[in-house]
Length: 233
Ligand code: ADP
Ligand code: ADP
Image (cartoon, rainbow, N blue to C red; front, side, top):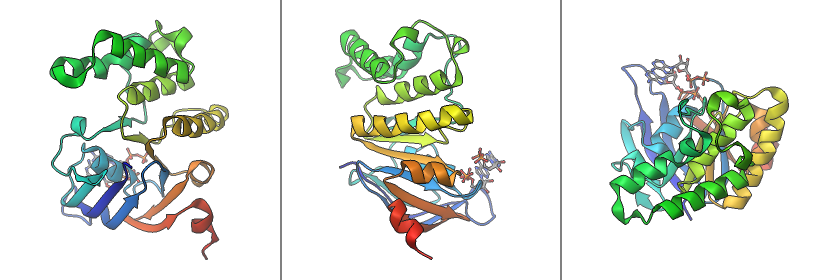
């Protein structure tokens, strides 16, 4: 069911104490799991270890029961949305969204990704995120909220088993953020896949998570549903 397991994972960037030190962390399949904790506690590092962009110093990463510790980021069935969305400024919305798929089609002839399939997926993602009217614009011609939705669309067209979001709402103003939370929860229900989201905002975590992971100082402090986590003393 596309759960994620971090098994004895540590990450050291240098000789200092580890940035991440996790005995065992299970992220249930199909959950919307939120990693929450103060800035610098290791949330982005944990996400990077799941994505494969950050190699752990020790331990194993399992996705959907498969050990992916030595599998490259592109082959893990995960997609990542970055804090600043990292859109290509010279490409239209449509090209931004299809870019990863076009690359995959080129490198992997057996992927079944022909032009028709790519167009179908892009249209579906645009439809799902309210971007259909904006397909021919460039990022500079979009609002912050619209850019964020392009970042999301670009991740979901790859149909990842696990969608990884690093502070996806931090670039939005307060008013948009509330709306974007609701949209993310709806998108998660619609996709039915596993979503892992990082935030330092407790309110955001509480309002969105089906499963909460509270971190501090490189460690996991608490795990459970929002109700379970906040009932404890
Ligand atoms: P935040 O969580 O505060 O939005 P980041 O996750 O980018 O920001 O970084 C968290 C902390 O990690 C910051 O204190 C930042 O200075 C530090 N940091 C990030 N990348 C590096 C790096 N390459 N080298 C050293 N420190 C880094
Ligand atoms: P968070 O996402 O919770 O803000 P990070 O995972 O970004 O935390 O950072 C955890 C710790 O690792 C911080 O102390 C940060 O400064 C450090 N760190 C993060 N990235 C790097 C890096 N590339 N090189 C050195 N230190 C880093």
